[in-house]
Length: 268
Image (tube, rainbow, N blue to C red; front, side, top):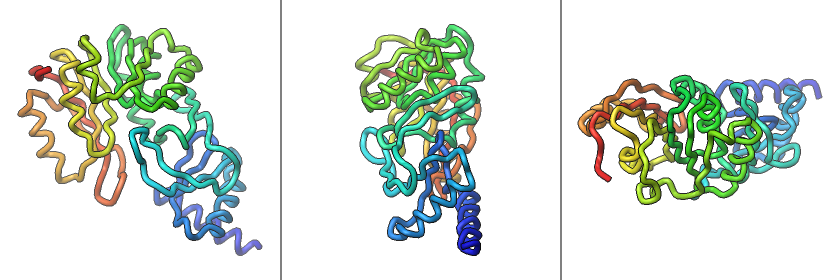
């Protein structure tokens, strides 16, 4: 039994170091071969013994799918997929089976909020349960969070109340790609955590941000693509102030953050 536990502990450490162990609230998320069900269940129990704050262990069995950007999970240990996650002093209630959330973006959530001042107007498409929008509202910005997933909208509204920022945060349930037809207003800033492969959202959001305003744009690319992408933004009348890698999402593919200033406005 002791040898078995040591073996499982070594396996758990390997998983943690390789980036496959993500904790959201009191839920641990693994990415293990689903056919090794018995071994996976043993590993889940070992994780819960070693990390007392973990009450549920999930195994991710499908990638993000559909308009809701929700992955498929199997429960290896514990019960339920709802949790409350604490990040940078904020609380987020969410259900991983119904909403998208990545704890690996916590630095970006704080980095963007630190740039925002009271009274700014900020557009946040693909807002999810609020990890970008809520810190912005807490800084005194007036944020409009746009989200298509009705479950995420419900949690977002609850999280706005939970974090006492509901007065600065409006929630619009709708398709971010239809924003130019829905809104007739200019924002000081936009934060765009773009879904994989949907970089065309940039041209939909750009007309909604004033000249001199900022777009924080997230995209998934290979490293060699970044210089050419930055040059293409410059040719569009967008000044790239900064770009940085925000972690790997697939072999050779990373999420990249671009801080872009609008020098020349696009067409509606």
